[in-house]
Amino acid sequence: MKIWAAIPVKPLAEGKSRLAAALSPESRIRLNARLFQHTLAIVSTVFDPAHIIVVSREAALRDIAAAQGMHIIAEQGDELNAALDEAAAYPPASDGLLSISTDLPNLTPEDLHSMLQEIESPVAIAPDREQKGTNALLTIPAACIPYSFGPNSFSKHLSAAAERNIIARIISRPGLAFDLDTEADLPLCPDGFL
Image 1 (spheres, rainbow, N blue to C red):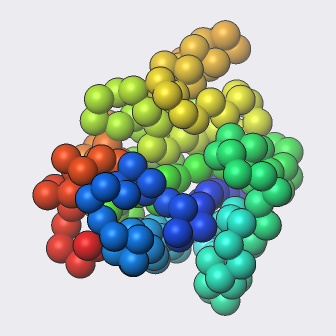
Image 2: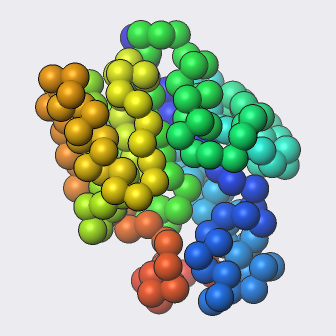
């Protein structure tokens, strides 16, 4: 049994739409590109590229991942949970999948190791700062609970695990909790992203 990493990513011009009032379209594209590159760099320090899956509708992003030896999936729709279903269908059925958001500017290799260490439960969830959303989700096997990203995804993932008699591990780390979502988050973004 292996654990794979899944990185779903929107086209650069579509990502971080909630920042449209604060950033120009060019600045948003640049921010999204830097966040994507940062995520790839961190994930590739923990996972072999052969066990990283990038799911995107944007060919240029798939090309970047493919050039690094990662698996790519041309996303068929434009909905995050469906994209992760596509990623979960790629590895062998018994393998696990760690899905990682691309809007985590403080993400470190240690954050990912914390998701992978001491796997006593087949589900580990890293919530956002408000414990409403989910920023990373480990499932073993990949399809052991349904993906429920979106509003209140943290509680939805916890409930899905409980319905299957799984006690999910909750991973609380600053690098996993801070997601760049709103204008109020921009002053907290590290140098080099904006």
